[in-house]
Length: 313
Ligand SMILES: Nc1nc2c(ncn2[C@@H]2O[C@H](COP(=O)(O)OP(=O)(O)OP(=O)(O)O)[C@@H](O)[C@H]2O)c(=O)[nH]1
Ligand SMILES: [Mg+2]
Image 1: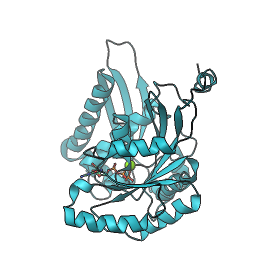
Image 2: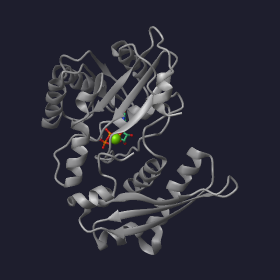
Image 3: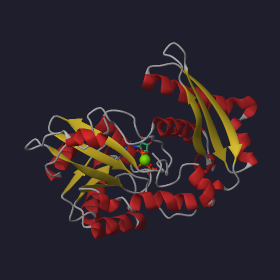
């Protein structure tokens, strides 16, 4: 049965709430962490380095009285490369798409031009927005009061303003309640067992990319792209065999990614494989190779080949 078929057969339930909620903010404010916290699963990859998310990603939350389709987006920033332009376009073009926008601001950093630009676009969309001051666990009470005052002013007009910690899961129940209050009555758009719109290969590639970002430094996290070359699944007795390729922009980056005696690539591979095994409760065999695609971040053709294209599933 396709998703569409199952919605067709879903009788409308009075009082059932459903809709699309778009998460926006500058890079590193905790959008993906927040979506994962609501889902109770690690769907979106997360890192302490900015510009981790590169695509829009649906995460579907279900409970008895509601279905909330969250849309995680890349952090909005000043784009330098074609890749960054793609990322920012993914976010900006999503702003007006939902029933509600959730805009995140960091309590532990000064707000700047980037945040003001985002607020402008949020207001221009005409979609109601909920404003969240995230990472409150990182600041002392007096500093928090100052941040809150600025936040209140910057996000004026929000349907609600809430201070939260996505990481410590503080304040999230209140946020969930505000979201439900804002959503219209409607059907479940997706069957209850569907978590996302992305393919398994996309999620596997993202997991590998997360480990690259975590373990490497300087330009490497930004200059890498991961694609899944093949996945072979014979029977439940045997491991699932995944072949992946990590693209970098230069030979020197390839050397750094592989590391002395192959140590770095091994570390990335082992960590990614262990997480795949935890998630799927199955054995995996993961083989990774590194390929040089010269300046791929600037080249629209290469970007498309690496999955930075609108029509990816
Ligand atoms: N202390 C603390 N850290 C947080 C909180 N929320 C997120 N983080 C951390 O902030 C970093 C960025 O989190 P992400 O969820 O990847 O941020 P993002 O907004 O999705 O970032 P991009 O994908 O780059 O736009 C990670 O190291 C998170 O663990 C929070 O409430 N408190
Ligand atoms: Mg993210």
